[in-house]
Length: 324
Image 1 (cartoon, rainbow, N blue to C red):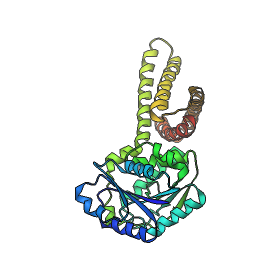
Image 2: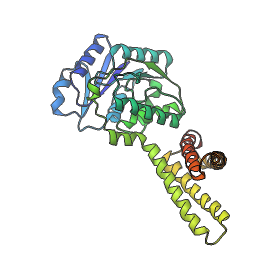
Image 3: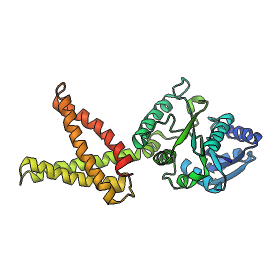
């Protein structure tokens, strides 16, 4: 078993953590993710193995580098270098993985008062996004403390992403195929988490990119639906114009979602019938609930509310069932 610590521009907390781990007879590998010469003195203090490269390539790249290097190890436990993970919790997660042979997450209680606002609410959003993608609840999707059994190394190495989005992608891919465990650990945030290198705009975009692509696909299909309707109603009745326009827009939506959004490898024979059935069910739900809600609300507002709810449902169902 090895403890894998990706590190970028660390301070003395990394030295303290490594010393404590080694004092407990644990094997440690630190990956210097392009910190540069200014941090060489920190890494020189470490008595464990260190892999260094330059320039900075991202946490996901560092984790994959470490996993490749430790491929023969039976378990790899990833931990952050900023002092958020106690040695006792690292050992607890590792022991749980040894027993279960499953991925084990060290999850924090993010409802505590010491949790920074952006961390608390950012995790709630990603947890909801994780539920949409995978249909499972995860208390702490952003935890860096994870015990990975050898059976999952290939999946970990092949998951998309080189930066912060990698951990979410790997967790989502795994959750659609295998069970995982959650072990509660101590919640530690120092100086309002000022040591974090997470970039709110850029890294959030990377994490939510699958959902953003789905939104873009839906907007393109909606625009195509309107344009086709305007064209067809010049030549046929409105009823038939609606149907023809919807067939074309749904086809466009299916192609984009299959190849660009969900990147499905399932055959067309499997995905197309599922998509057609789902679209028909979605149309029935939209009509039924809009009609029901319009009895207490204006019809337009009722349709907006219903379609917004069905949009969330649509993303979850297509990801988990149609294109899986």
